[in-house]
Length: 560
Ligand code: ARG
Image 1 (cartoon, rainbow, N blue to C red):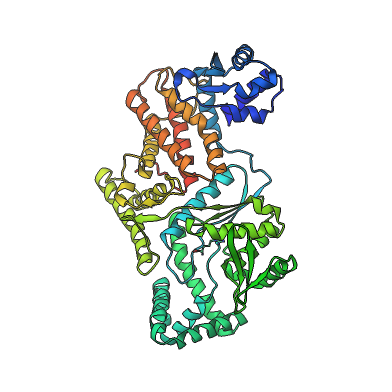
Image 2 (tube, rainbow, N blue to C red):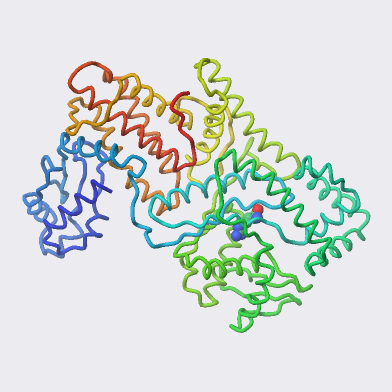
């Protein structure tokens, strides 16, 4: 926040402290055109407080702004246009970045606050869908952003490990299953058993009774049922962990739906005590204004997804004392979360206002939703493998003597998939195209990684020895780069507050482009008295690109 905070202080004092520093901070703008200054401060809103026309206030303020950061101030149309002292700012920013390194851009906004974030959350015995991949990638980035903003995070994988489908799966396994096959290829085998169960149940409906029978046994804690369930769960989680390892993602908790089984009675009792439960066709529901009722208990006495989410929310609030709670789940569950939050509000929990459904659109191939059905698991793994293979082929062509090719290919291939996902506004559907993702030019992950590696190689070639105390850059094209470096802390804060990793993605693309322009116009390694300063600039660009990629969950190799 260095620049904006600095300017806030200066303006705050010039206003004799008569306006809240926070308000001043919010008012500061970044003009779109360079002739309007590096920063602008509109005086319209404050004019009435000071009983002056906006332009007069601006003129009055202009005289009183003094700071080593400011070169000159102009006034126009009720605005203060502030031009920064480039030499001072350049030196200050580069020193700041190169001293703080990966801590640059961190803030204390969330200090003392806990944020729970529910993401990934795949379903046991089912393939890990594209939707789960999106949730995983977006959730991971938001968790990184939260930590960067000072929050303590609790990363929760709310695995779908409960429900009547487990009864069916057990019945199917007992009839047709083979232990060795399930062990060899768990998700595939379990899914096949589940699908077969449904096919056969079409003409032998009595199978459904067997399914119910097994689910009942599971709910009653029957040894055999529980041990099968535990085994399926472990095999599935094991398979999912390969994906998490590839992505470099970890969780603090795998408490899924089943974890809340013994907490359901309490929730139902609470709802009843508060007079919120209503009977409807033998089921119990909470009626909601403007929304369909939230189904809490089915006619047969079993509870539902929503009931478990109510229990989970209450449990999380009491266990983690969160001040903010995020659920990264696809658009198609919007109604579910609206109902969930509304029921919690009706229960009198004011903290329900701190919960947010971080929704996202679908991944489309040929304009169609990628189906979660058969074959999908192969697709996700195939996609990852293919991305890595393509990245490797690229390395073989461009840099065949690279030392750790496989490792780098993995970082680039996976980085490409992740970047492609995060660079879009998450709420929109996105079209899937592997070849687009892997391009070294354009707005792609590999482009940013490549630019980062370019910076690394310049530092090596130029034998960079550290930042000079006074950084001196007289060329024109370094200034836009400096302005990006300066904006990074603010971009992080905005991306976090708006739950929008795409702002980080866009930012690092812009920075990479500005740097590549600089690289094209200035001889960075030329032996003159600004060489050390240019290398210091390159070093700070490298730091920020690296950190930006890290916030998205992407690795930044030094060579590629
Ligand atoms: N397992 C669910 C699904 O795949 C997502 C769970 C999201 N988290 C939650 N607390 N409901 O659709």
